[in-house]
Image (cartoon, rainbow, N blue to C red; front, side, top):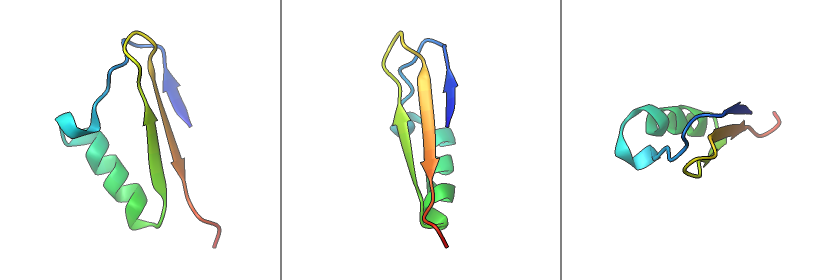
Length: 51
C-alpha cells in the first residue's frame, strides 16, 4: 500500500499514469484499488493472488 497526504482527487481515467499502473498489476492477475478523496490524499493498494 502506498499513501500520501496531498490534495487527493486522482483520477485514473484522466491520464495514462495510474491507468498504466493498473494495467501492469492486472497483467499479473492482480488488481489495483485507488482511493483519492479531494483534500484527503491518495491511497494505492495493489493485491496479487497467491501462487
